[in-house]
Length: 145
Image (cartoon, rainbow, N blue to C red; front, side, top):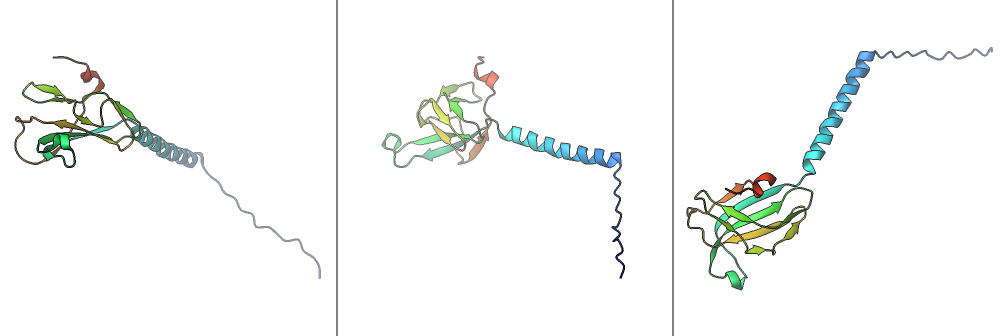
């Protein structure tokens, strides 16, 4: 029996330059979108909610009183420091809320909450609702009227 050399099958793959370009464009678009999503997630974000006509339990200083409670929550990933909470209504009156829990200034890390208590809220109507508020921008915090 004669030994014959085994023939290897010949396989050719041809890829055009336009296919490579489309693949590179797709991969770079997905990478860019992921980087933008990570950038937007990695910022300081403050969520403000206002709950009216609330009573505080297990606190003798606040027993028998009703408050509007302004909840300041860090919903971003970066820590932020709250140095003051100012409440301003449409009647051109405002108040610096010094009654907070925990005391100011306070650093809020991801998911932590600070409560500010407003005792006299005669201008707000009497329905029990919770509102979402927008924090002022960095430029508006120092402005005066």
